[in-house]
Image (cartoon, rainbow, N blue to C red; front, side, top):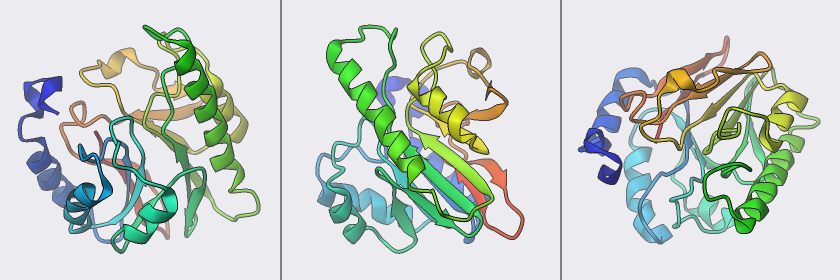
Length: 223
């Protein structure tokens, strides 16, 4: 991650140190992508094993640099206890539901290609599938998690924001952008809070996103 700037020097140690300051065993932590630089699952398992040693229940989403991510069935079989992975589906724990997908660059982005258009449309469809899997489930709060921002490059609407408006989650979390000024990014979408939690922006400390009564806290750690 040091290629993104000097602030990333020693970032794994910083994440682990800050995590242990604010996350308890009953907290739920959404890790929204770019989890490991590994290329294969066996290599990534070293990072996941370290992550498993930290407090809290972890929910993983795939980022654009997670080349190691295998089929979801293989990944789930390999994950340590108290660690979950989302892909085209959702998770309900107590009164809290989590849906999400990786996302992608949106139309109007710099160097947006026809191939990007295909991936973008596919990711919108996948997010829709994730949200649909919650039909028939009882929950009070819904966190929608993405790796990429849900809005367009100038803060405009996208297929992702259409789904946000349709399903009205309690809040949305996303990362991906490095070195971005959070003050220049939308903080709400049609009244729904948007939490930008890239690690360098939050100084590698997991952020309290939702404090649910009679349920674990929900944190978003970063990267």
